[in-house]
Length: 157
Image (cartoon, rainbow, N blue to C red):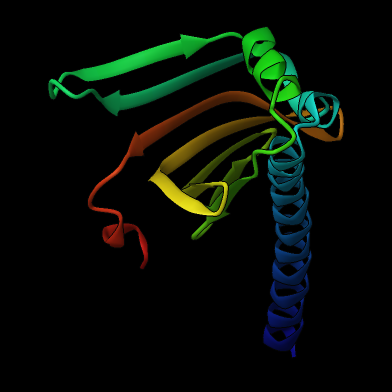
């Protein structure tokens, strides 16, 4: 009988932990989806709601001369760029998969993507998000994306 009770307690605790983790995954994914909704709509206020005030934003790519580049942007520059999106331009960042890892109030999210400008393929790559649970609300504290125009089929796994 004690073995049955022990197994029952382990089952209950495992179920509770998994339910909490699923709730956190949903909240984290919602934060990132809201970020992209704002990007697609050109709504810098919506994007801003997902960003921590001290966010660091970087992009890595290879230029035409095959030099590896890393560019750092400010929160303000990102938001101004989104606010100045031309209404005739449509953006679509198609997320191909999600890998979410959580430890306490820190989350790491990896999202391979394809980016389309005016319904035409522009580039592909991956985003790496770091999020912080700021008193119950997940905020993006670091975002780096990698961009390339070739070898995009390897992202579809």
